[in-house]
Length: 99
Image (cartoon, rainbow, N blue to C red; front, side, top):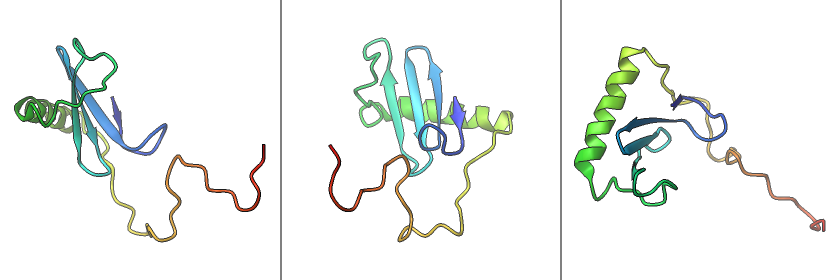
C-alpha cells in the first residue's frame, strides 16, 4: 500500500515479499520489518536485526514507487510546530472532566 498523505494514519508505504513486510514511515524516514510467517500481529520489528532484508525491500519499494510515478509526501513550508495540534489526538479539555 501507499498513502503519501495523512488519512487514517501518518503517511507511509509498505511492500510485502514472501514472508516479509516492510513499512516505510515518511514522517521520520524510519522503516519497520516484519516476518509475517512468524509474527502475523507485526509485534516484533526486525529492521535492526536484519538490515540487509530491510535494505533489500526498501530498494524494491523505491523502485516500484518510481516506476508507477507515485505521489510522494512533501513538507508543508507553512507548518509551525509551536501552534500545531498533534494529528489523530483529541485536544485536551479545559475545566472539569465529564463522566
